[in-house]
Amino acid sequence: MSSVRLEGIAKRFGPTEVIKQVDLAIESGEFVVFVGASGSGKSTLLRMIAGLEQPSEGTIRIGNRDVTDAPPSERGVSMVFQSYALYPHMTVRENIAFGLKLKRIGKTATEEAVQRAATMLEIEALLDRKPGQLSGGQRQRVAIARAIVREPDVFLFDEPLSNLDAALRTRTRMEIRQLHKSLGATMIYVTHDQVEAMSLADRMVILHDGHIEQVGPPAELYHRPATAYVAGFLGMPT
Ligand code: ADP
Ligand code: MG
Image (tube, rainbow, N blue to C red; front, side, top):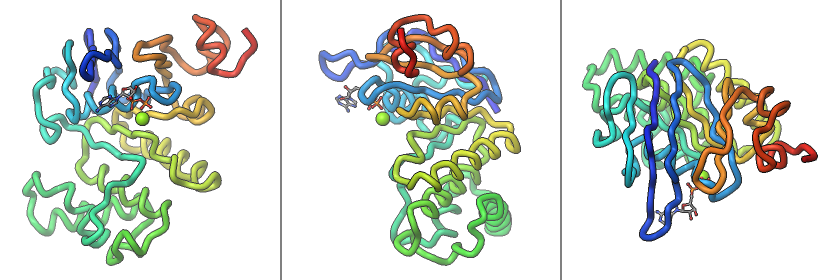
């Protein structure tokens, strides 16, 4: 596990500044949820941590390293997307093992690691299927297994439950929380759903129009919102 620090992060797409001077220190092993309305900049911020977008300004540190210019594969992070992003032509086993390609750990170690991840997510029976033969919930479990197998220091989740039905959302949410407990990894989780955020977060980061409105444990934000926006967003009368 690693700490993650964002220092003076700004992001512009052309003339539009979508992230404005974000400073944030995430502790090693913490479960932090970025929450905010659609378009508030959650995905952009997460993608910059993953190395999928380059900040226009500022520094990103993971552990003791400045990773601002490091490629995604060298950051020690694994990302789980809303859309699963599995390879349709590969089996589940191959999809999970793909996460280990760059590690070059050999066939036996790869097979063992895939088995461990599959056991953890209870998808052993699906290993020889292709993604097209899986339900949405099963696909998302495969995507999480693929993230786990790399043993990252930091997990990044971008609205991982959005394509699941309500019952499966609750179950998968609890599994992600359980995973955090057993792995002890740092997790950064993006959602637009304040209930989901409050049930998962050690600390919530409320994003609004590209800036941080407030950071704190769910109960603190709920009982002591710093701004009218936060109070409104968390569903309280102002
Ligand atoms: P969220 O994930 O909170 O819904 P995003 O980070 O996806 O928000 O987007 C934040 C803002 O940045 C939005 O206004 C969006 O239209 C804009 N944006 C995101 N990606 C791009 C891009 N590649 N080019 C131009 N604008 C973008
Ligand atoms: Mg988004």
